[in-house]
Image (cartoon, rainbow, N blue to C red; front, side):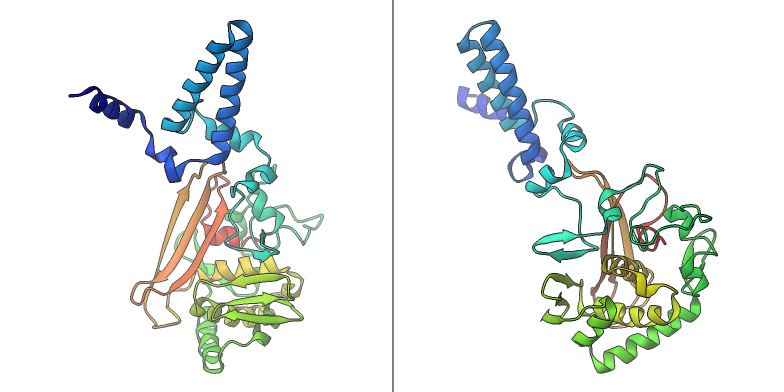
Length: 322
């Protein structure tokens, strides 16, 4: 084997493709280059300048090949980089459940910040704009989604499912399917979005995307997902006490959470399959990601992500927390 071949083999063995190339994390690379610079300056000051320069070049080579110089760099950047700095590199929190306002995601503060100091997840309906009464203790998503005193239970929207789980109340599920059919016959109009989000002006941008009040854009995974939300919102406005007090993000979260309970595709009537997984992206807190799609026609029904608070509540329960 030639020297060049040996060198190529060594470099290939040293390279970490999961942390380099398209997968390279810019914030982590910046942190490591800064650390390499400090080490080089220290060596140059204590020893001689050429030693510091050689050390810096060696560190750059390691960063280039392996992505990181310091083990555990993602944890360091995740812990010590402020959210605004991570956002500059596209590392802000997921905004799947919110609105785009002036090019940036606008989620409820609770959705973006994850667990509270008490450890309860606060991503979802009512977590931010409505305060808990003096005699009402705060509830985690797992409790809120199984508590018979929860507003969604009181409105007969949710009911206890098998074991300790929850499901749509049979009467609400039937009414929802009927309302989906009614909305489908007339089609979704901007007026439906004005009612859904209390918007004064709504402009249609596509089959399933709109601009609200010339400042916030919102889109759905498919026209069928939009259809389901319009139907659900019209039912909730009649059934759920305080629906008029929910802000746009809270309504969006509630509707997405309910959509994850659908068992029948609005497009073809086929069964809906759900998948949920935990992802741990570089420089960000882990989040739970869930998606739902029709098994027969493949129509996407829902796609959501929330910060992982370490509890056992599924994403749809987190989105429906009140």
